[in-house]
Length: 358
Ligand SMILES: Nc1nc2c(c(=O)[nH]1)N[C@H]1C(S)=C(S)[C@@H](COP(=O)(O)O)O[C@H]1N2
Ligand SMILES: [Mo]
Image 1 (cartoon, rainbow, N blue to C red):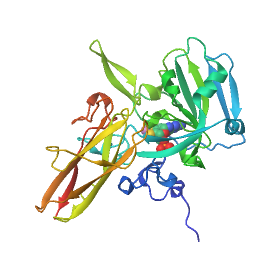
Image 2: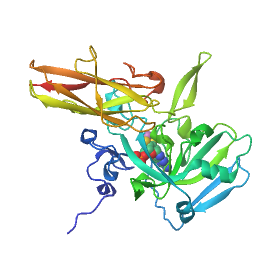
Image 3: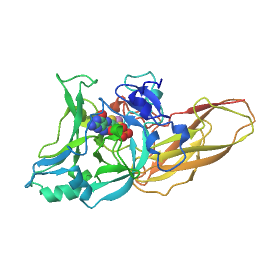
């Protein structure tokens, strides 16, 4: 008799962080190609994936616009499309490295992946609708809803919804394909937003409505969750997370990996976030000295750059702390400590990967 297939069996090879809703991590130590294979791309969902169909799909564009309209799946696919790479990282990636341990999905390194996204530029839709003069943000509304976890929790079901500024709309794609394949149920079928350069929460899956607003959106996923504390005239105010901070991570060796004294070892990893990644250094002595890595990918906005570093493992046995540190073209570099204003998000400090040399 065939084994009963659970929904997560659709994603073999991923590391389970939560079964229901499906939250699965990319095994970051398998980082090889620039594009993450679709079946290894991490999945972060707050609720059960809604069952949407091509035939009944409808995307509305409304709000502070002159000519609201809606599109069927066929309409959308008939429009001129673009294909571009973007790295998505969950804002909670690396949470396991926070000490003391915090609540939330215990992501290690792999809540980050890169794909080629195909879809219609958001500006095409906004131009067709015609923005009102007072338009200021674009809200993406999704078909999934439920009871969120971060306090304070609103009563009843809350649908997933996030906004971006009109400036960021210029980079955004209303995507219907990922690495040349239609989106899978867990990645937002049939249509999702891709907001390159922002943390993953902005790239709304199962997109059903695009609503232009004339005041900054204050929704639950914009303020309560996925927000941070900014000090204005000494007062902490809640602002929405946005751009991915400059970051790098070591894929190999893995934490606690055992290496042989004196062996040659190719340390590898990737850097992303910030503006454009221009440099990455590696330290094998817990941050005392740093050496540049060799990049495998060209610099470009919104996509990671893989890198490697040929290391001769020391003869002296013991525990070694490896750290990587990326810098962008604006001169931003990774801090040494986690910035507490971001709570359990934006974990981009240079945390050590410890390896054991025997
Ligand atoms: N509708 C909807 N969109 C969503 C989410 C969600 O729960 N519901 N999760 C967001 C978060 S937090 C992240 S990190 C990315 C993850 O995209 P992926 O699952 O395709 O990797 O989707 C974002 N879009
Ligand atoms: Mo996320």
